[in-house]
Image (cartoon, rainbow, N blue to C red; front, side, top):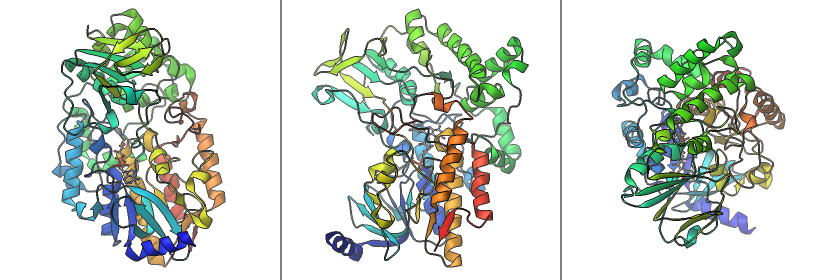
Length: 545
Ligand code: FAD
């Protein structure tokens, strides 16, 4: 009774809209634009002070995209495409943030967004068939549809090491970098982690710091970005037929318009393989090297091993000290099974006299102390510790809204106790009118996310409009459809090598997180066809009321 009273009190003062969108990044902005055009009233809610999402929060030195920026862009409006020109093949964080601000201005989106507002709870009210969204700032929101555009990589992982609070120096997280920047000149700096953010920032931090010590648990494969202007061949392809270029991306496996390879490694000679590899290395392009060498590299350990060996050879050549080179060579996962990184001078940075690599596999961290970090062999005096320790990926931001209560008082965290259960990665049984953009069970982080985000947003907004026009109020997947999708997810996961690595794709980076491959490995194009088929077969797998 208490709960009911509170809810009705809140409803009295609640902001009433058709749709609440949590998140004002790439996903939330496009959602607000599409919803408005489709005639829905909507509010955006974001903890941040402005738009941008990922590109608002991640301001560490060297932060960039690692999908070519001409591909990592909105494609829904050809006029927007011609109104904006990227200055580099891989744009920096400030430029991407400016772009998202430009988009927000162009479509006048900020007026519908409540910034500095964190969503704390969400409750489905069966009587009114509406969601009630509680926030930490301002009135709650009562909405027909609740869409979480909260990001796959937006919940930074808390440090797992004792003593962080005892440290007397400065502490930073790459995912929450101060907006005014950080002066590291002349300081003794530690970077903990060697994932993508670390690999991007380490070369720049090393240039500033008096000394940089990198603490590495798992080495990653990194490839040179060869940044510069957008490559002429890609620009020509895009400009000669923009529509066809974008359509090829939408139908591709990874959301970038490259042809599907059919040649397998053993059909090529050593010399042919090396030639392909060297071309890929020189291209400075993750999707190229992940998809264009030979068809078996992503699906077969033998085909993959050849790529691994060729990259390890590059690391050996780049790093002068053999022990450091050996420590930097990944040997516990197939190439591509963990997110590979793009770098600018990463390996060469270890040749600098002011850079030390500590291999935590041999020398684990014992504690963070008042003066620095001690391992079980040494202690390092430090002025600054940078945590580049990654994110509670894919489910972290969704589960941080707690509870999300669906039909019959069911809580999402209970339903997901054994791992995320979804239909199409978009919806959950028992949670009517609830949607996730790039949720677990969708291609999401295994794709160019700009393409995946547009597909999700278009699909969701088109469905909401169709529902409304047909006079329906609620949409929810059936138990059978959800079980079937989970089965299909499991089948697809057997087709690639992602399941063979302990990564943030599988939840292995977060202590206590349920293990299991979270993104859909069937590919962006096939996934799109499935979503379209669900519609063409009369909303197969959904209950509408
Ligand atoms: P986000 O951009 O993460 O936005 C989510 C927003 O939701 C955030 O602003 C957050 O504050 C807000 N939010 C979350 N929970 C709440 C809550 N409870 N209440 C209120 N607000 C909330 N992808 C690529 O495809 N190519 C790349 O090159 C690439 N580079 C990347 C580089 C970095 C450093 C990182 C971290 C990610 C990168 N990604 C890349 C992935 C990137 O996250 C996506 O491409 C895309 O930006 C996601 O957009 P989004 O709107 O879905 O989520």
